[in-house]
Length: 64
Image (cartoon, rainbow, N blue to C red; front, side):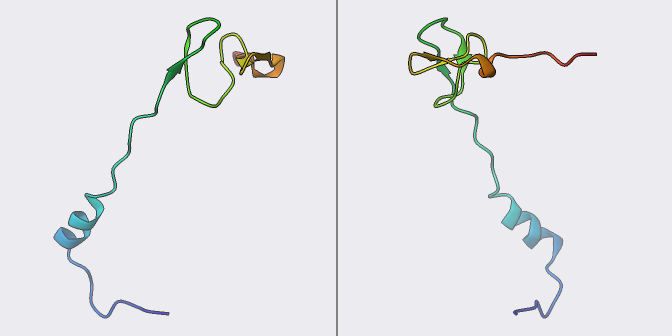
């Protein structure tokens, strides 16, 4: 296993990590209720996906 021979400087470490960027989540609208949701997942508002209704996908709030 390769082990670094010298300590990597802070500027080199930060320059390497500057490329680690996140991207915004893609959003789409539900064809049934027009709510905003993530693609390829059941709608959190009405619980439908590709015309089918999934009752388990309904949003539930945490019981206090």
